[in-house]
Structures are given as structure tokens and as C-alpha cells.
Length: 265
Image (tube, rainbow, N blue to C red; front, side):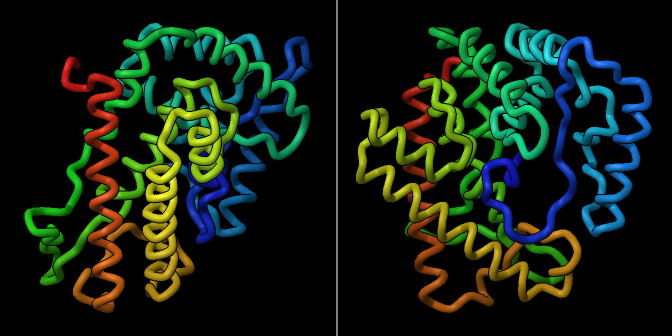
């Protein structure tokens, strides 16, 4: 699930997976198998998810009926954790087993969400969680840490783009999971202006590539990739492109604010 489910993660990240069990399946011994699976991934270099979003956690190892009940709870009792879990599920990609189990759960979710404007507003509101690190006159806003001026690419740029695109896709019942495919479909169906969809795709592509480049050159490249970059270490062209991309993020957040009436919540 998450960035790997969307097909937008190249560098190694932590585990983020779940299991849907067919109703009536004899799952005796399944907990031990899932624990062994998670441990094997850890040995391969994929550390456990800090939020325990893994198949060895019973909360993410559910029968189809139980998952539909869980989706219902997340929709109609939308706490912060519920909305986060729902966002994680929306990006899920089936990689093994019977993919129709996931498809039916996703179709159930879309059926429950039809014409529920208030839910989509609550779901999209997460784009307001972090400020875009771009000030007046396109000045990059950084934070000092250990004598370095750092900027968080994920919080400041990647997350609001990905979640905003995800929110629009969910609102319009799109089944695509990759952010770029979602943008294509949103533009194709007239939900986004095609030129603006292109700008969003270019901005997201640049930010993801910048994160990848920084991760590959980081001493921690073979551990977990970080999201912090040093703008001063970028070339002049990269800094200009970063400013342009963050400008698109600010524009998108403004559009989402009006579209979902985020000021009302």
C-alpha cells in the first residue's frame, strides 16, 4: 500500500501491506505465517512499519466481510486515524492471491461514498496539515537542524500533491492508484483542466526525482530514504525548479480549499 501501492517508490521503504482473507477460509496458522512473512521482509532490508500497518497485525489481516465493516466504520466515524487508514487503503494494489477480493472491497467503498460531500471535505482536509515552504517572492522556507538549513520535500510538496490528487480521484470514483494515472483520468473526464493537470504532474515528477536523487547520494541510501534536503546544496536550476514546483503546490492547495470548502471544517 502507500507509495509502493501507487508505484511511486523506488528507494527502499518500510513495510506497508495487508491481507484480505476470503470469507469462510480456514485461517488456522495464518497468524504465524504472516509473522514469518513480515520477519522475512525485515531480513531482506524492509524494516517494520512504525504504525504497524503490516500483515502480522490482526487489524490489517481481515476477512472480506470484516474489511467492509472496517471501511464502513472509517467512513461514518471519520477520526484522524480512520481517515489516514482509509487513505492507505485507497492506494492498495493486489500483488498476490485473488485480486477480486480487493476489487469488491474498493467497489463497496465507492458505493458508500456516493454524493457524500461532507466526507470528501474531511478526507481532503489533510492537505492543510503542513505549510508549503515557499514565502514571498518565491523564497524557500527552511528550518535549521544541526547547523543545516533543511526543507521537507514530503510534507511541503509531495504529500499535498499526492493526497489532493487522491481526494479528487476518490470523489469521482476513479479506480486508478498511481498519481499520474489519476491526473490523466481526471483531465480526461473534465474534472481538472488539462494544462493544470500537466503542471501538477510535472511538479510531482520533479519532487519525486529530487527525493530519489538526494536519497541515492545520501549516506543512508541503503537504509530508509529521508525527506529532508538542503536547498543550498542544489544547483541554481534545481532551486528554480523547486520554487516553481512548490508554487504549483500552493496553487493546487488553494484550488482544493475552494473545491472541498475546507474553510468550513
